[in-house]
Amino acid sequence: MKASGKTLGALALSAALALGCAVPAFGAVASDNPYGARDQDYSDPTTNLKQGDTAETNVNIATMITNINVSVPLNVTVVADSAGGAILAPTTGLKHNTGDAYDGKMNTGYRIENYSTYPVAIKQIQTTQHTNNRGDWALVAALAADGTTQQGNVADMVLNLGPSSTQNDAAGINEGSKGTGGAVNLANTITPTDPGWIIQRQVSKTEPAIMGLQLSGTNSALINVNESSILLGDAANPQPDTNGDGYPDDPVAADNAFKIIYTVGAAKTTV
Image (tube, rainbow, N blue to C red):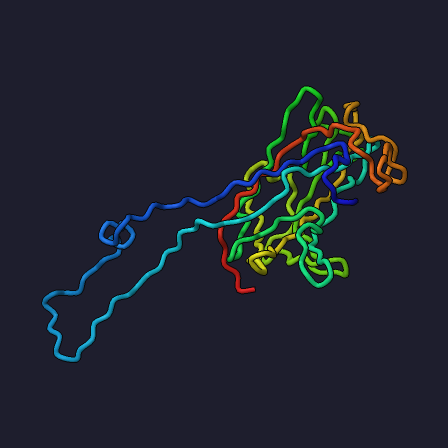
């Protein structure tokens, strides 16, 4: 599925970024700094030091994070078949070059980009479902055995989201996840979940590292249809396609189904 700014389907997923960092305030001068004063212990003043003897001070360092710089997509659209079955999802994120030079305008697919000078972890994922007057799409851990909806007014959906295992291919570059976590079932992230994903630090000041995301899943047969969200034509012959690029214009208003909230924080990785 080609990545573009167009609305290509019947279900919209919007991702909101929440910075998971509490930033402490430091005092203007060292004597007023509560962090410095907190750990100050002094040697016994009665200790007798002779000429040439040594004494030592341990210096501890705490980090204040003020420059996390991460980009996530604001909207992602997938297509659900009315008969049920596998969804059609956006392609996995890749970076592309023009000639031998990185060209950010050529990036494609679903991805998280890290412009920070250090690795960044996705500390938490939480999915919130929307309720609207056009009907609900329900996230479930598994579909019913007969493939019918048990929860939703439109359909039930099983959606899995995780880092792509393909980090580089002939078409582009994807630094991938440097953490230990794999895909998560979005029905399980209605309760906030730590996915264990880490995106490595920026490649350079002008080139981020990216973690391509892979969204996959299935939906039950629809028991209700929102007319405004119906695609015109089909995958082989999208309609209307006024510019001839093989993809439909924007004839639909995809359903606003749920939101994925990412909480990010600084991370350390030896990879």
